[in-house]
Length: 116
Picture 1 (cartoon, rainbow, N blue to C red):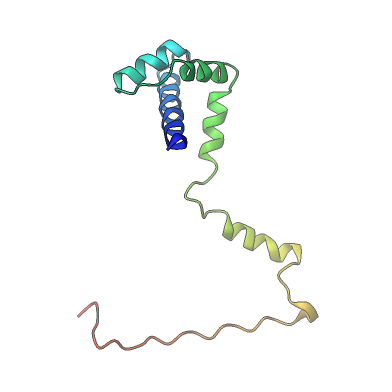
Picture 2 (picture 1 turned 90 degrees about the horizontal axis):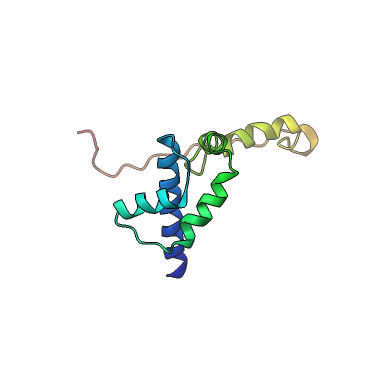
């Protein structure tokens, strides 16, 4: 449960920091605390201060750009990695033979159709 509370505090302070950045304000502990209070979120005063210090030296636009380029969703990188493997020579079986193609599965007749 403690990790969940810590994650909630981190998310709340992160979102407050993003709101401040988006509005063109400096990211300060007092402003973070004010946003959290307006959202009825109570956190220890140390957390907004930590975020203020962390964000003071951070390139927020660069962080946002990098986050947007990650792809998201959790499964985006696999096709690119699979496409890169043949170029590296790792996908060809030994002896230069092609791997046998899997046979297509036959559809079983269930006695009804979804489209009837």
